Amino acid sequence: IFVVPNISPHPRDGIGGWRFEDFALAMREGLLPDGSHAFPAFPYTAYQRMSVTDLADLFAFLQTVPAVEGRQGKILEPPPANPVARMGGNIGHDENPERGFQFMPAA
Image (tube, rainbow, N blue to C red; front, side):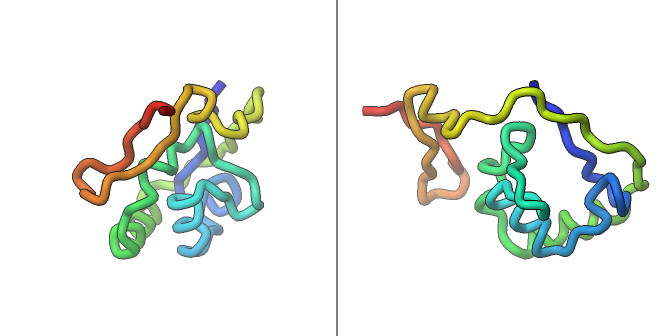
């Protein structure tokens, strides 16, 4: 079961208390400020190659939306250690940023 987090700027329930460094780490590595993992609810692998400028712009934009009270519920099942490997492959990326990340079946 995927439970999405509150990404509004609410200071307690959203990302309003996050520093830019917290946001960038979550976007690029899927690690939240408390040390927990955002995967599988947040597909951080799709954002790993964003530039610092784009991340900063996105973070600044998210600070302008209305704050919403309410935390996410508990994720009922822990994420698999390596979900892509369980599908029989791995995630890699092409050097061409237009193609981005791709599923590559195991050889």
